[in-house]
Image 1 (cartoon, rainbow, N blue to C red):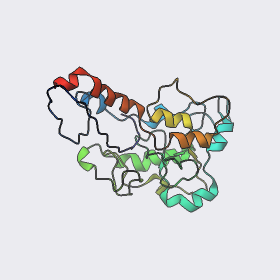
Image 2: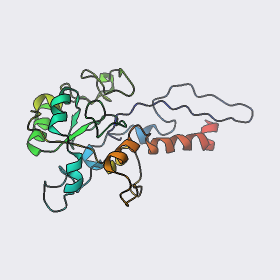
Image 3: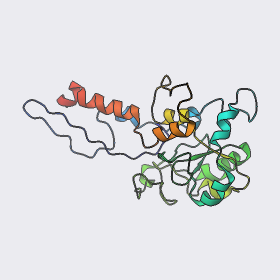
Image 4: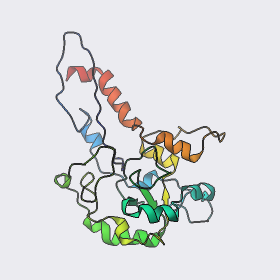
Length: 233
């Protein structure tokens, strides 16, 4: 599974000769693909750039410091929006829905990544023991596009207490997800990229990705609509 919380409703339709059976919904899975899609959720680390902290040593060989500086959450933003910032680490198995304003705002626009290893250790010590794996623990989300409330579980795996509750905003280093990382979480293939001529800034790239759909999911839905198997079930 992809560790990105992005509740969307899709309506598919196909006109068949002589009618046909209508699939009653809404469905929480793609028919015939339950085993493929309902597996374990992969950690965010598998979707992160290897040349950016925390996956690369800060200032060490291979770190993309130019992009890293652009992605840092400012101290002023942390002071103003700290109670509403969703903080995640590479071992997290969820991230909140990205919006068009992600990168300009930190509150309710998408998750921010914690950089320093010491604070990540706090997450493993205090938050991970509180994770639950039962689907019965999932609670309804208040708004489709909004960040879930502190009492809302995401896919049965949300910590009971937010990671930010263990951190000091004045010393915690946070960054936004990069455009490449956002594309990875949205199901775009590795070969897809924005023009390398510098015509689009990092903020513009983030804005274009925000509020988009997961292309891998849409591809599966199109396959469902266009396949003969869908009509014969």
